[in-house]
Image 1 (cartoon, rainbow, N blue to C red):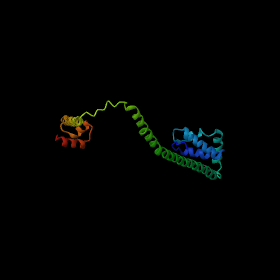
Image 2: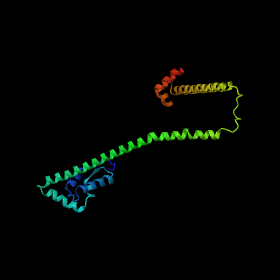
Image 3: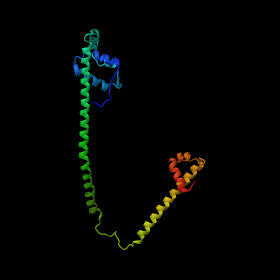
Image 4: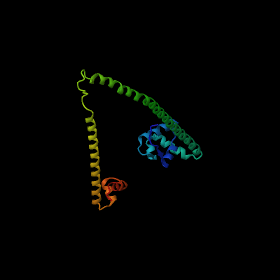
Amino acid sequence: KYRMPAIQLTEDAKVLLLAYSWPGNVRQLKNITEQISIIETNRDITAEILRNYLPEQHVNSGLPALFGVKANTGKAFESEREILYQVLFDMRRDVTDLKKLVNTLMAERGAQSVPTAPATTAVSYYQEPQRNLVATVVPATPTIISAAKPAHPVVDDIQDTEEVVEEATLSLDEVEKEMIRKALDRHHGKRKNAAKDLNISERTLYRKIKEYGLD
């Protein structure tokens, strides 16, 4: 009911539980069980802990009554066991109902949020800003755009950019190659230690050594 870990009674707690007269019947037993489950951090409930939740006068009167008369012991035990079974059954039913409720809420939330949210976002993002952009960015006199520019400088810029990227890639490869070489020299060719130093796997280091011809 409260999503708490289950509690467990020790043997002396079970004896005390069965010895109690339970004037409030099932309702009192259920309330005490819930109180212990919420308040106690220790999930193993001893007789000493259980006694704190039972009224003192009932504990004193219940113990002699149960164990003093042999003929009634079996009937009392059966009655208390039925009460425990009923409480456990009610708690299990509450947990099952809670699971069903959570699953229903999650299903409803998923059905509501998935289809509608992206559609609203798409409309507000792809339609409204575009109209504002056309209205505010386009100047009254198109003096900025010039058709006299030749097309080949753009091609040259692209080629220059590709060369810069290629040079940067080569530079990174050289740096990586140098780092691997220094790590191998530092560890006297021991690849395992070198890989650990470079924070890469030994298999990756082996592939890089083959790739850069460092073997």
